[in-house]
Image (cartoon, rainbow, N blue to C red):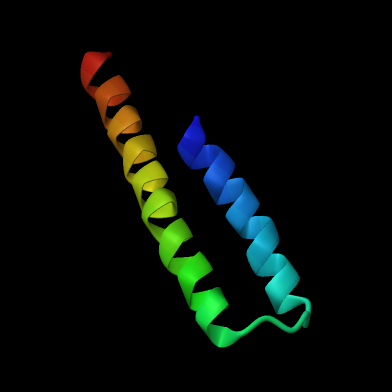
Length: 57
């Protein structure tokens, strides 16, 4: 899905930043704010799916 793709790209981007490449702080914040909602949404979707499987059994 798009959310997973964005999260994976974001993870690579953040690892690059953490590896010490020079990027303006404002860019780092912009990247993080773009990625964070997708990571949160993906986690809550996983939890919802697990809860539904438990209920249906």
